[in-house]
Length: 135
Image (cartoon, rainbow, N blue to C red):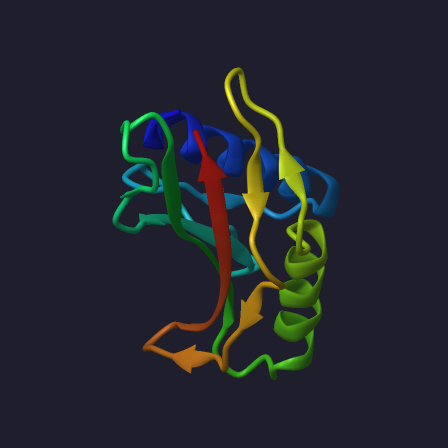
């Protein structure tokens, strides 16, 4: 198992959610034009240090955070963003197993929804989703 496969599994899950919710996603390092509504998701894959937990070096624990940021226009209040953040959290609930060709990627704990941050044009509410893989 490698970061490419983990990232792919997490992106696939977010894509399924986004299609069902009819919300576009600004994928990492990909050209994106925000919709007229100003409502969309941003994804960030943040792997942490790997840990070898056997003497033989035959099993690696891979952990990290998959962050999905809910983006709404400034001045539109917080409730709609909070509702979408809750839906993202539910889609990535604790112990959700994302199947891959090698090992499942497990969501490790309930996602954390943080307070929104205003910038010049958007209100951004991050949802941090911890994952773990043993391979």
